[in-house]
Image (cartoon, rainbow, N blue to C red; front, side, top):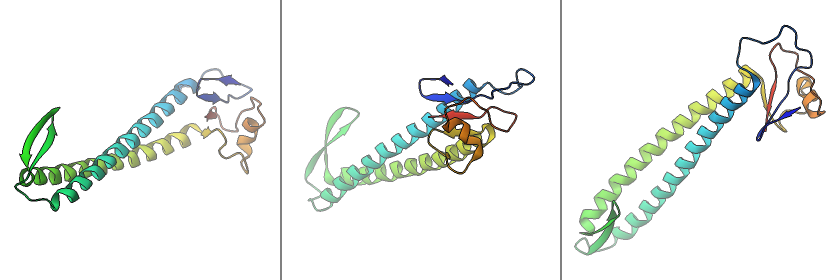
Length: 160
């Protein structure tokens, strides 16, 4: 069984007819890993922005009870700027709304990427390591550690 740094590829034991017209197993795994990485990056960015929303909410709640003429400081582009609470509060609320819209957009993109990943997995018969080992006859060869192939014409790909 050929081992890659983060994936294992299961190839059919009897190759009848040489190369297929589709991408190689390595190309399939690389594309799948790239899509998973993109989805993870989106999730990470969404989590980061959610934390910023929470920080904005905390500051907004704190400033609502403060005298509007009181001076406060705001970091703008790496520069600390002196403003009043009545100037800063609307800007914070506006920023919070914009960040919320961005998070919604990222969540929509993550859902689309998830569907794309699912379609790609089904198209190329990709199985994650430890997934679907009970009850499926075609994954029994990979759970036994052999290089036996699936019953389909294309190579089954096992990704960790």
